[in-house]
Length: 266
Length: 231
Image (tube, each protein chain N blue to C red):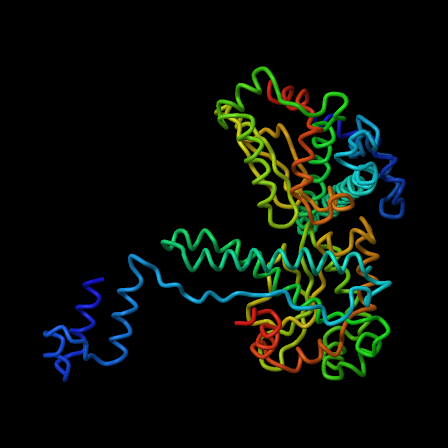
C-alpha cells in the first residue's frame, strides 16, 4: 500500500503538490487523493462496499391467472419458493464475492453466481412473457405483436410453424433448462430458437423475446411426466405484447427494464 | 448388470414393426439377433418405500420415466442400425447424445431401484464389513460420508445424480456427481446412486429437496451396495 501511495503521489508530477507531499500535507489532485484513500482502505480492512442486491419481483398477475394452463399451486411454489431461492442465493454469492480475499476465491464463486443470477434473470423474464389466457396479450399475437409477427412469417412461415419448432426444441431439452425465441445480434436481426441448460441465461448479444421454463418444477405438479402437454398449454399464455416490446427494443433497454424489476430498493 | 438389462429379441420381430423400411431379403436373410432394452421389474411394491418415497412417485418414476428412457434408447439404437445399413454415418453419429441420455437413464434407474429397499426390510441403517471399513478409511466416518453426499446432492445445478463410486485402479471410494443422465463409466464403478432429478421427489417434497435427501437414507439397500463393492 505504501508503494501505491508513494507512486501515486510521485505520479502527480512536479506540479503544485510536490512540496506539499514532502511535508505530508495531502494537497494532491482529487483523483490521486481518492486512489490513495481507496488503496489504504482496501488492506488490511476491506471497505464495506455497497454490494448490489436483488429482490423478488412481484408476479404481474395473480397466482391463479394462468389457469388452466399453469395451476395456482405451481405458480405459487415456482415464484415464492424457487425464484426466491435464486434471489437469496445470488445475494449471498455476490456478498461473498465482494468480500473474497483473492481471485481464486472469486473464481470459485462464479458458477454459483451464474446459476442463481441466471435463475433470477430467467424467471423475471418468464413471468413477464406470460399472460392470462383470456387476455388480448395472449389471444391475439398478430395484433399484439405486429413487427414480431412479420419477422415470424419471414423466418418460420407462420406462428404455427414457430410453435411447432419451439415445442420440438423444448421437448428435446435433456434435463433441466429453458427454450428461448431470440432476436439475433445484427441490426434488424432475424429470429432463432435456442435452448440453454439449467439456469444459463441469454446474456450475450442475442435478445431474449420469449422464454419457456422446462425444469420439472415448472410443470410436474400438474402434468407430471407429460412435458409435451405442458408445452402445448404454455402457448395459450404467452404475452405477445411483451415479446413485441422486447423485439422492438435493443438488448440493453430490455435489461434496463428488467433490472428495474429485479433489483432491491437501495 | 448389462445382461439383466437386455433381453434378446429375434431381429425379425424388430424388423416386422417397420416392414416397409426393409426389403424382404434383409428381413429373412440373416440369423442376426438384436438385443432390446426392457424395463426391469421393481424388486418391491410401488408403496414399499413409504413414507420416505411415496407410491405415486415410485409408480410414475418407474412406469413412466424409466420406460421413456428404455423406449428412447431402443429408438436411438434402431436408428443407428438403420443408418448403418444405409451407410449414413452422419445420422448414426447424431444419435450419440440420445444414446448417452436414454442409455444413461436406463442404466442409472436400473442401478437405483436395486440400491433401494423398504425400511422394514434391508433399507436404511449403516453398512457393515469391508464396505464400512472403506467408508471409514476414505471419508473418516459414515456420518461424514452421509453429510458429504447430501452436500453433493444439494449442489447439483439442475438435474443429475450423486454416486458413491469405486476407483477400479486404486480401489478407493469417493463421491461424484453427474449431470442429467450421464452414466458413471470408465474407471469408476458405481456403488450407490441417488437421483436428484425433481421428478424423483417433487410430488412429495416439492422444492424442499433437502428433506428428500435426508429421507432417502432410510431406504438405502446396503446389501446391494456392499455386493457391488465386493465384486
